[in-house]
Image 1 (cartoon, rainbow, N blue to C red):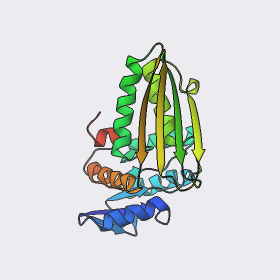
Image 2 (cartoon, one colour):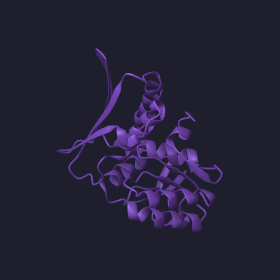
Image 3 (cartoon, helix red, strand yellow):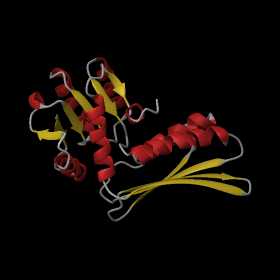
Image 4 (cartoon, rainbow, N blue to C red):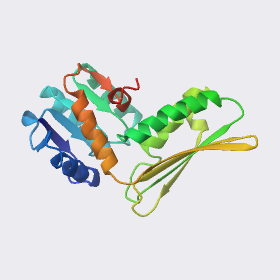
Length: 217
């Protein structure tokens, strides 16, 4: 049985992780880091570094699904890879991670003559804009097209209780290519986080991604 300590348990994502963990006999939610095998963080950008410090001091593993970190926070997070094994991903969905793989290949093949743009829609409570997923899409496309992420347009919409939709459009001469991922339930992220927690057990210190978990790297 894998024992998980959840940071951000009172949030919408935290509640779904708890529910999915309780439905899986291979997981148990615990209340202290000393009793945990893995810490899962879906809290707040400013809480991630203290949470990682807690995990590192206790020699535990971690899964970080929190988004909205500053560039400096991201640098500090990366430094923890020397002290503990942890997974950092702006999106724990299996489908989204496969989408990034598809978009990277599409960008390389459509390098010239196609203009990419991104549109993302989330619920009105989401604080970061653009979403971490959309920013990752921009980086993936920029790498494939040999440009910079700031040259790729991102439209962010916040409405209702939308879980999350990301659409990437490649506009070319006389044709367009559209790739869309729609999350129908927060459970897709919760199940991905639990899958990551199971995978990171036994791994050496280092910074991993969902691409590692899914065997794409």
